[in-house]
Length: 309
Length: 56
Image (cartoon, rainbow over all chains, first blue to last red; front, side):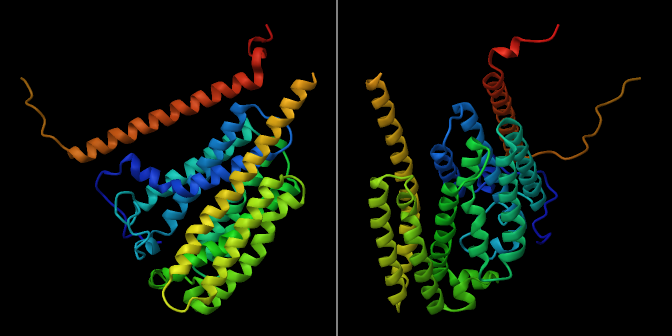
């Protein structure tokens, strides 16, 4: 943290700057995975309550993003990828971002607790605290395992979605948690392979900076080999149909093939860039097919009961 | 005895600062309005017709 971003003049920050503080792209993935957790949960929840839960989860994720940008403003200013963010650009002060993030975090957690349930609200509070305190303040600057452990925060939304419906936690959303948890390292390490200079300049101990490219490529393969079978688990455990099973096996095989290409790559970063791009598609595909599979199953069950009656 | 216009003190906002403040104010108003709508709808869903049942 630094005070060099302080400003004495009245703010010129527009709405877009505050939207940028919420990290809308991360937020969209959080909302999507939480939606899947919410829809695969057993039992019924009123659509208004479900939408309220999703809104709170989205705002909570955005609040965590704003608090992350508040604390990381100094390193954001030194990285090409993040130098255009509102605080390094001088449009929002760190204090304004911190106030914005804290207000939204408290509103999101309390609203989720009062209107939906306190298990989901506690999980949301834990997610925000974990992302801001454990990942941003502690791990990110101190260990190459930063994104491995910190990834838990990004993996929790399906569990929050499930808890919003059931008021508890079960093995099904925990498997979804594990899928995102083991997806995060190969995803970010693929990115860090071709952004290593950026991370080194900012003093962030990402794996390629600390352990070198060869070790990073090796670790990408290891995590992908754990991830691919985990991706198939919802089908093997019986809460996703054969359509999901086929999609998970095929896309998991593609992830392993890409990881092996990253491992074999000696010059340039073409395979790493491909792996980074495909990993986003992979996670989206798994959750989208799981969602489609579940909705299709419910529609079929309704049709059968309709004709039987 | 009449007093003349007082000299202006304080900060004069530029056009850009005024525009930015106005857009932020509108966004806050919309967010608060949305929050009220959410509370209203959830109240209807949770209480239903019981919302009219009050001890006299």
